[in-house]
Length: 274
Image (cartoon, rainbow, N blue to C red; front, side):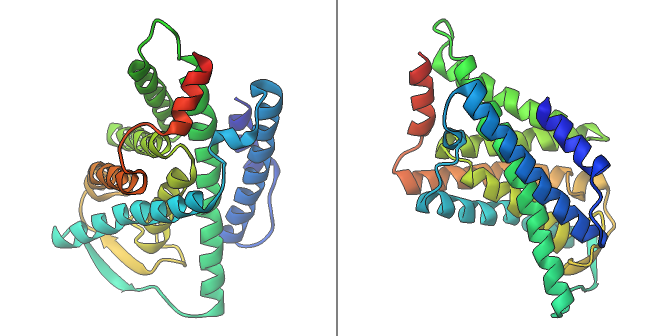
Protein backbone atom coordinates (compact mmCIF):
# COMPACT_ATOMS: atom_id res chain seq x y z
CA UNK A 1 0.00 0.00 0.00
CA UNK A 2 2.83 2.37 0.81
CA UNK A 3 4.45 1.54 -2.53
CA UNK A 4 1.22 2.40 -4.38
CA UNK A 5 1.02 5.72 -2.52
CA UNK A 6 4.61 6.52 -3.52
CA UNK A 7 4.04 5.41 -7.13
CA UNK A 8 0.96 7.61 -7.52
CA UNK A 9 2.18 10.59 -5.51
CA UNK A 10 5.59 11.21 -7.08
CA UNK A 11 4.32 12.32 -10.53
CA UNK A 12 1.63 14.47 -8.85
CA UNK A 13 3.83 16.36 -6.37
CA UNK A 14 7.16 16.35 -8.21
CA UNK A 15 7.58 17.97 -11.63
CA UNK A 16 11.22 18.01 -12.85
CA UNK A 17 11.98 20.56 -15.54
CA UNK A 18 13.02 19.55 -19.06
CA UNK A 19 11.48 17.61 -21.94
CA UNK A 20 9.13 14.67 -21.36
CA UNK A 21 11.87 12.03 -21.71
CA UNK A 22 14.09 13.78 -19.15
CA UNK A 23 11.20 14.26 -16.72
CA UNK A 24 10.26 10.59 -17.02
CA UNK A 25 13.85 9.55 -16.34
CA UNK A 26 14.13 11.78 -13.27
CA UNK A 27 10.82 10.51 -11.91
CA UNK A 28 12.05 6.92 -12.32
CA UNK A 29 15.27 7.72 -10.46
CA UNK A 30 13.24 9.28 -7.64
CA UNK A 31 10.90 6.29 -7.61
CA UNK A 32 13.86 3.89 -7.32
CA UNK A 33 15.28 5.88 -4.40
CA UNK A 34 11.95 6.08 -2.57
CA UNK A 35 11.08 2.43 -3.17
CA UNK A 36 14.58 1.36 -2.13
CA UNK A 37 14.16 3.29 1.11
CA UNK A 38 10.73 1.75 1.63
CA UNK A 39 12.09 -1.77 1.09
CA UNK A 40 15.00 -1.10 3.44
CA UNK A 41 12.61 0.09 6.13
CA UNK A 42 10.32 -2.90 5.59
CA UNK A 43 13.26 -5.31 5.75
CA UNK A 44 14.61 -3.73 8.92
CA UNK A 45 11.44 -3.07 10.94
CA UNK A 46 8.82 -5.48 9.54
CA UNK A 47 10.71 -8.49 8.22
CA UNK A 48 13.68 -8.22 10.61
CA UNK A 49 16.14 -9.30 7.93
CA UNK A 50 18.69 -7.99 5.47
CA UNK A 51 17.37 -6.37 2.30
CA UNK A 52 19.72 -8.69 0.40
CA UNK A 53 17.27 -11.52 1.10
CA UNK A 54 14.84 -9.92 -1.36
CA UNK A 55 16.96 -11.25 -4.24
CA UNK A 56 19.67 -8.60 -3.96
CA UNK A 57 22.69 -10.79 -3.19
CA UNK A 58 24.57 -9.09 -6.02
CA UNK A 59 27.64 -10.88 -7.36
CA UNK A 60 29.06 -11.96 -10.72
CA UNK A 61 26.31 -14.54 -11.28
CA UNK A 62 23.62 -11.95 -10.47
CA UNK A 63 25.04 -9.61 -13.12
CA UNK A 64 25.25 -12.42 -15.70
CA UNK A 65 21.63 -13.32 -14.94
CA UNK A 66 20.61 -9.70 -15.58
CA UNK A 67 22.46 -9.62 -18.92
CA UNK A 68 20.88 -12.91 -20.02
CA UNK A 69 17.50 -11.53 -18.93
CA UNK A 70 17.98 -8.46 -21.12
CA UNK A 71 18.47 -10.71 -24.13
CA UNK A 72 15.43 -12.87 -23.29
CA UNK A 73 13.15 -9.92 -22.62
CA UNK A 74 14.28 -7.98 -25.67
CA UNK A 75 13.80 -10.99 -27.92
CA UNK A 76 10.04 -11.13 -27.24
CA UNK A 77 9.10 -7.83 -28.97
CA UNK A 78 11.87 -8.30 -31.55
CA UNK A 79 10.44 -11.65 -32.67
CA UNK A 80 6.91 -10.20 -32.52
CA UNK A 81 8.02 -7.43 -34.88
CA UNK A 82 9.46 -9.97 -37.34
CA UNK A 83 6.17 -11.89 -37.22
CA UNK A 84 4.31 -8.62 -37.78
CA UNK A 85 6.33 -7.96 -40.94
CA UNK A 86 5.84 -11.54 -42.13
CA UNK A 87 2.08 -11.37 -41.57
CA UNK A 88 1.75 -7.98 -43.28
CA UNK A 89 0.47 -6.37 -40.07
CA UNK A 90 3.15 -3.67 -39.92
CA UNK A 91 5.47 -1.79 -42.24
CA UNK A 92 8.55 0.40 -41.77
CA UNK A 93 8.08 4.09 -42.46
CA UNK A 94 11.67 5.17 -41.96
CA UNK A 95 14.83 4.45 -40.05
CA UNK A 96 14.63 6.50 -36.85
CA UNK A 97 18.27 6.16 -35.85
CA UNK A 98 20.39 9.29 -36.25
CA UNK A 99 23.89 9.16 -34.68
CA UNK A 100 23.86 12.54 -32.96
CA UNK A 101 24.74 13.60 -29.43
CA UNK A 102 21.09 14.45 -28.72
CA UNK A 103 19.99 11.00 -29.91
CA UNK A 104 22.54 9.24 -27.71
CA UNK A 105 21.39 11.35 -24.74
CA UNK A 106 17.82 10.26 -25.41
CA UNK A 107 18.94 6.62 -25.55
CA UNK A 108 20.62 7.07 -22.17
CA UNK A 109 17.43 8.53 -20.71
CA UNK A 110 15.41 5.66 -22.18
CA UNK A 111 17.75 3.18 -20.49
CA UNK A 112 17.27 4.99 -17.16
CA UNK A 113 13.48 4.88 -17.57
CA UNK A 114 13.26 1.19 -18.44
CA UNK A 115 15.83 0.06 -15.87
CA UNK A 116 14.22 2.21 -13.19
CA UNK A 117 10.74 0.77 -13.54
CA UNK A 118 12.13 -2.78 -13.88
CA UNK A 119 14.17 -2.46 -10.69
CA UNK A 120 11.25 -1.00 -8.74
CA UNK A 121 8.61 -3.49 -9.87
CA UNK A 122 10.84 -6.56 -9.51
CA UNK A 123 11.99 -5.48 -6.07
CA UNK A 124 8.38 -5.00 -4.97
CA UNK A 125 6.48 -7.81 -6.72
CA UNK A 126 9.12 -10.54 -6.84
CA UNK A 127 11.64 -9.58 -4.17
CA UNK A 128 9.19 -8.53 -1.48
CA UNK A 129 5.69 -9.79 -2.31
CA UNK A 130 6.61 -13.21 -3.69
CA UNK A 131 9.19 -13.84 -0.96
CA UNK A 132 6.75 -13.00 1.82
CA UNK A 133 3.92 -14.90 0.15
CA UNK A 134 6.10 -18.01 -0.01
CA UNK A 135 6.91 -17.73 3.69
CA UNK A 136 3.44 -16.69 4.82
CA UNK A 137 1.68 -19.51 2.97
CA UNK A 138 4.21 -22.12 4.07
CA UNK A 139 1.88 -23.88 6.51
CA UNK A 140 2.35 -27.44 7.74
CA UNK A 141 -0.99 -28.59 6.32
CA UNK A 142 -0.26 -27.24 2.82
CA UNK A 143 2.10 -29.24 0.56
CA UNK A 144 5.16 -27.25 -0.49
CA UNK A 145 4.35 -27.35 -4.25
CA UNK A 146 0.91 -25.88 -3.46
CA UNK A 147 2.55 -23.15 -1.37
CA UNK A 148 4.90 -22.22 -4.20
CA UNK A 149 2.14 -22.28 -6.85
CA UNK A 150 -0.23 -20.16 -4.74
CA UNK A 151 2.42 -17.57 -3.87
CA UNK A 152 3.59 -17.48 -7.48
CA UNK A 153 0.05 -16.95 -8.77
CA UNK A 154 -0.83 -14.37 -6.12
CA UNK A 155 2.21 -12.21 -6.87
CA UNK A 156 1.50 -12.44 -10.62
CA UNK A 157 -2.14 -11.46 -10.07
CA UNK A 158 -1.13 -8.47 -7.95
CA UNK A 159 1.36 -7.46 -10.66
CA UNK A 160 -1.40 -7.65 -13.30
CA UNK A 161 -3.88 -5.67 -11.21
CA UNK A 162 -1.32 -2.87 -10.76
CA UNK A 163 -1.18 -2.34 -14.56
CA UNK A 164 -4.12 -0.71 -16.38
CA UNK A 165 -5.69 -3.10 -18.88
CA UNK A 166 -8.39 -1.67 -21.19
CA UNK A 167 -9.26 -5.14 -22.51
CA UNK A 168 -9.15 -8.73 -21.26
CA UNK A 169 -6.27 -9.66 -23.57
CA UNK A 170 -4.18 -6.84 -22.08
CA UNK A 171 -4.86 -8.07 -18.56
CA UNK A 172 -3.93 -11.60 -19.58
CA UNK A 173 -0.64 -10.27 -20.97
CA UNK A 174 0.30 -8.70 -17.63
CA UNK A 175 -0.78 -11.81 -15.73
CA UNK A 176 1.34 -14.08 -17.92
CA UNK A 177 4.23 -11.60 -17.66
CA UNK A 178 3.94 -11.76 -13.87
CA UNK A 179 4.10 -15.56 -14.05
CA UNK A 180 7.13 -15.43 -16.37
CA UNK A 181 9.01 -13.02 -14.11
CA UNK A 182 8.02 -15.03 -11.05
CA UNK A 183 9.35 -18.18 -12.70
CA UNK A 184 12.68 -16.46 -13.32
CA UNK A 185 12.86 -15.48 -9.64
CA UNK A 186 11.86 -18.91 -8.30
CA UNK A 187 14.42 -20.72 -10.45
CA UNK A 188 17.31 -18.28 -10.04
CA UNK A 189 16.65 -17.21 -6.44
CA UNK A 190 17.60 -13.61 -7.25
CA UNK A 191 15.88 -10.68 -8.97
CA UNK A 192 18.74 -10.08 -11.43
CA UNK A 193 17.19 -12.34 -14.09
CA UNK A 194 13.64 -10.91 -13.84
CA UNK A 195 14.99 -7.35 -13.79
CA UNK A 196 16.85 -8.04 -17.03
CA UNK A 197 13.80 -9.65 -18.68
CA UNK A 198 11.54 -6.79 -17.59
CA UNK A 199 13.94 -4.06 -18.71
CA UNK A 200 14.79 -5.78 -22.00
CA UNK A 201 11.14 -6.17 -22.94
CA UNK A 202 10.21 -2.60 -22.02
CA UNK A 203 13.18 -1.03 -23.81
CA UNK A 204 12.80 -2.92 -27.09
CA UNK A 205 8.99 -2.73 -27.22
CA UNK A 206 8.86 0.94 -26.29
CA UNK A 207 11.96 2.50 -27.84
CA UNK A 208 13.32 0.15 -30.51
CA UNK A 209 10.23 -1.27 -32.24
CA UNK A 210 7.33 0.81 -30.82
CA UNK A 211 3.88 -0.24 -32.00
CA UNK A 212 1.85 2.32 -30.06
CA UNK A 213 3.97 5.47 -30.38
CA UNK A 214 6.95 6.92 -32.19
CA UNK A 215 9.34 8.35 -29.59
CA UNK A 216 12.49 10.14 -30.62
CA UNK A 217 14.59 7.16 -29.53
CA UNK A 218 12.86 4.66 -31.86
CA UNK A 219 15.21 2.74 -34.15
CA UNK A 220 12.38 2.06 -36.60
CA UNK A 221 9.29 4.16 -37.23
CA UNK A 222 6.52 1.59 -37.71
CA UNK A 223 3.00 1.74 -39.07
CA UNK A 224 0.75 -0.95 -37.62
CA UNK A 225 -1.99 -2.30 -39.91
CA UNK A 226 -3.11 -5.26 -37.82
CA UNK A 227 -5.45 -5.17 -34.82
CA UNK A 228 -3.91 -4.04 -31.53
CA UNK A 229 -5.27 -7.12 -29.72
CA UNK A 230 -3.05 -9.22 -31.98
CA UNK A 231 0.05 -7.19 -32.80
CA UNK A 232 0.08 -4.55 -30.04
CA UNK A 233 2.63 -4.27 -27.24
CA UNK A 234 0.32 -6.27 -24.95
CA UNK A 235 -1.32 -8.19 -27.78
CA UNK A 236 -1.75 -11.89 -28.34
CA UNK A 237 1.51 -12.42 -30.26
CA UNK A 238 3.76 -10.91 -27.60
CA UNK A 239 1.77 -12.69 -24.88
CA UNK A 240 2.16 -16.02 -26.67
CA UNK A 241 5.90 -15.50 -27.09
CA UNK A 242 6.25 -15.57 -23.32
CA UNK A 243 5.90 -19.37 -23.49
CA UNK A 244 9.07 -19.92 -25.55
CA UNK A 245 10.73 -17.29 -23.34
CA UNK A 246 9.87 -19.48 -20.33
CA UNK A 247 11.47 -22.46 -22.09
CA UNK A 248 14.61 -20.40 -22.68
CA UNK A 249 14.69 -19.53 -18.97
CA UNK A 250 14.43 -23.22 -18.09
CA UNK A 251 17.24 -24.07 -20.51
CA UNK A 252 19.44 -21.30 -19.11
CA UNK A 253 18.90 -22.37 -15.51
CA UNK A 254 19.60 -26.00 -16.44
CA UNK A 255 22.83 -24.93 -18.18
CA UNK A 256 23.85 -22.69 -15.29
CA UNK A 257 22.98 -24.96 -12.36
CA UNK A 258 23.15 -28.42 -13.94
CA UNK A 259 19.56 -29.29 -13.02
CA UNK A 260 16.07 -27.82 -12.89
CA UNK A 261 14.14 -26.93 -9.78
CA UNK A 262 13.35 -24.24 -7.28
CA UNK A 263 16.48 -22.32 -6.36
CA UNK A 264 18.21 -23.35 -3.11
CA UNK A 265 17.88 -19.71 -2.03
CA UNK A 266 14.09 -20.01 -2.30
CA UNK A 267 13.99 -23.45 -0.70
CA UNK A 268 15.97 -22.14 2.27
CA UNK A 269 13.26 -19.55 2.92
CA UNK A 270 10.65 -22.30 3.02
CA UNK A 271 12.76 -24.45 5.31
CA UNK A 272 13.37 -21.54 7.67
CA UNK A 273 9.62 -21.03 8.01
CA UNK A 274 8.79 -24.72 8.51
